[in-house]
Amino acid sequence: MGKISVELYGESHSAKIGVRIKGVAAGTYVDEEEISALLERRRAVKAAYSTPRLEKDGYEFVSGVENGSVTGDIVAEIPNLNTRSSDYPRYIPRPSHADYVSFVKDGLREITPGGGRFSGRMTAPLCIAGGIFKGILKTKGIRIDAFVKSIGGIVGKGYFDGATEEEMAFAKKTPPYAITNGEQMMLAVESARREGDSLGGSVECVITGMPVGVGDFYTAGIESAVSAEVFGVPAVKGIEFGLGFGFDSAFGSEVNDPFRIENGKVVTSTNFSGGINGGISNGMPVVFRAVLRPTPSISKTQQSVDLSAMQNVTLNLKGRHDACIVPRAAAAIEAAAAIAVAKLTEGIC
Image (cartoon, rainbow, N blue to C red; front, side, top):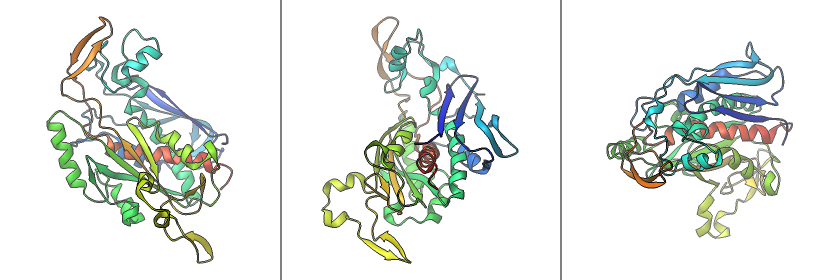
């Protein structure tokens, strides 16, 4: 890996959240349209799947960017304007959140409201970094498209169903950001929301234009680099590349990708490997899917503990939460993939 680094700071209910980016060459053009597009897809809206906590997500470059060009280390911030810390219990950890583990790890006296640095709110500055790197990668001919593949067991069209770049681009313009079956997905989310529950799903990401030879073996491979960034998106609990877990029931003769020459280039007839062999790009589209758990914050009564009294209690959450994080998370996963690819291709293309 090279000099590029990305650091998020702030918390869900702090005055502001931000990102520090190092290693981008001075003079590099910053494509703010790419940043705005990711932030808009990630932003909470008035929809069945989204939290009622509406933030404008207006950002500013504190340093490192002037007149649209990089001048040094980049610092960008977003103010938190719509917080309600009183909605969160001070001593009762929410099940399947990071409340309890961070309480212990950080030696806290009270639970940090809104999930603190572990909140999905932190994917907003992540999208700023992702937008910057998407713009840079675009100049190198590398394109990244992430979209909703499934919600609540309802599956939409994806790469292995023949989805085109045009369909992927169109899907990213309208919630829930799925190529097909979006209406059915939203009906399922609305049903879960009315019951005080939530739904999970998956996001598919397709990276085109990757040159042959990016990555390496062991932990320097593409899978390792992409996974490290994608698991930084809250609620991601699994990732698979190419055919992924579908390999478990296949014959080698069915899922090997034969090589052939096309227009003077080596390509593969199929792409079950997801564009990666031995951790290295083979020139075909890099394809992966990330699975996101149902939002842990639900309105149903749950069992927990009171950390001040050290006794079992029941918990009835208030607050404002997403009934399904998947549509908004697609932008964050696209951003994470852009960061990973930028690091992988640094100095190569």
